Amino acid sequence: MSDKLVPERGGRPADLRYSIPRRAKLPRTLGAKALFAACYGNVGSSIYYGLGVTAAFALGLTPLALILAGGIFVTTALNYAEGTAAMPHAGGSSSFARRAFNEPIGYLVGWIQLLNYTATVAISAYTAISYLAVLGEYLGFLKILHQAPFTVLAAVVLIGLLVVLNVVGIQESSAINLVLALLDLGTQLVLVLLGLLLLFNFQTVIHNIHLGVAPTWGNFLASISIAMVTYTGIETISNMSEEAKNPGRAVPRATYGVIVAVLFVSAFL
Image (cartoon, rainbow, N blue to C red):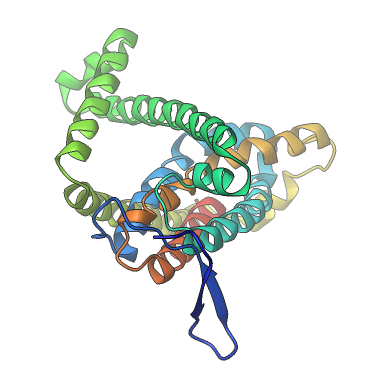
């Protein structure tokens, strides 16, 4: 199939879109829910290790730092949604770069993304095991996870299990992603409600903010860049677009869902 632009009518009057068709090399089995769950698992997990570091710099302005960084995230996500709907090929930004420039540039972008995911996987697995180690107070055998060598070993084992799960099949991993995403959203919603009811005091928040002093302007600007770590992973939907049943609809819907969920979690948690 050629790579010529093909016009497609959108859902609104005078809405004409152009897509670049190509024979899919992967089976199209994923819907918007599966894409949302996979991407939320990647983006949403960053809150567990990005929030504390952001708060250390932004102090009382942490919600504002996350919202400003979220604005950049929204524009990036919408660009990905538009590009992916037009070019629903596996590879995400690597495919975009290859189409816009040439093969070497696409190759370079692909390797940069692989290095990015390597770091993200390592950080997420290590953080997950560290959270699990807290249960050692109730389950004695988990106390061993407080020791650095065993924490690293457990993180490696966790990564290995996830690799096996993804090798088994995309549908199986997507089902688990969806269950975990809903469980995570429910847990964080409960935390937000409990925080608003039991801890939140608007006057305390306002009186603890001293612009230029606590936080300093330098720390606040740094916190915005650090907060961007919380939003890494929107690339996931693009990478899986070649396995989407109807990428023209599923990709934008999944992207909008991730934007709403992640911004809510980041701003309120």
